[in-house]
Amino acid sequence: MGNARPVLVDGTLHLQSREPLDQNGCQVNWRTNAPRLAAGSLIGAVLAVAVPACSDPGDLTINNNGPGDVTVVTGDHEVTVDAEGGAVILDYGCTPADVTVEFSSGRQVVLPGPVCPDQRIVVGDATATLQPVSSSQT
Image (cartoon, rainbow, N blue to C red; front, side, top):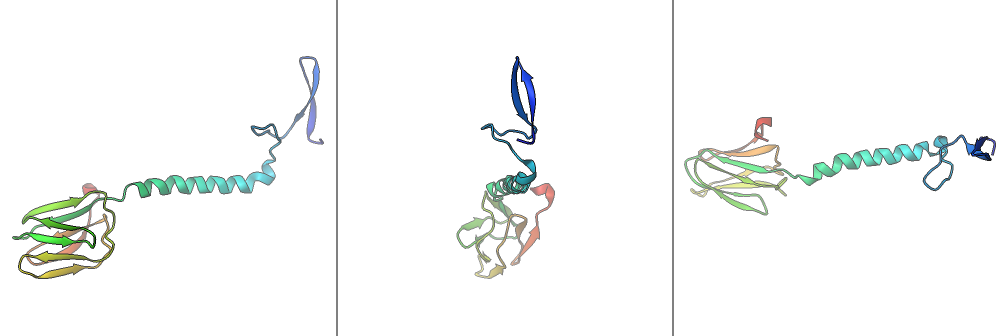
């Protein structure tokens, strides 16, 4: 025990390590454990950032500024949006594929997907586009 030093405690001589001890009383050598501790810290930090990101998929917003009702098909959802109205699919996240907007006239507009919550579907008079969601709308 070259790194231990004698210490007198209550009249008894003890050898005290200069290295810190873990919860089991074993010596912890920071020089050899540093890479493992750094890797563990990095993994913990990544998980702390990744988990909240996955816990809230976000809302998909549809605005219908046109004169007629439309049906929006996301691939796994079908939503009818009234004229001059809107809809929000809560906690939906991104669509699995393209989005189809069907007008009462029979016309269809296909928006390339996936469409995600940072975009909103904006319907006009026989038109449909994707527009970014502003930070004031989130």
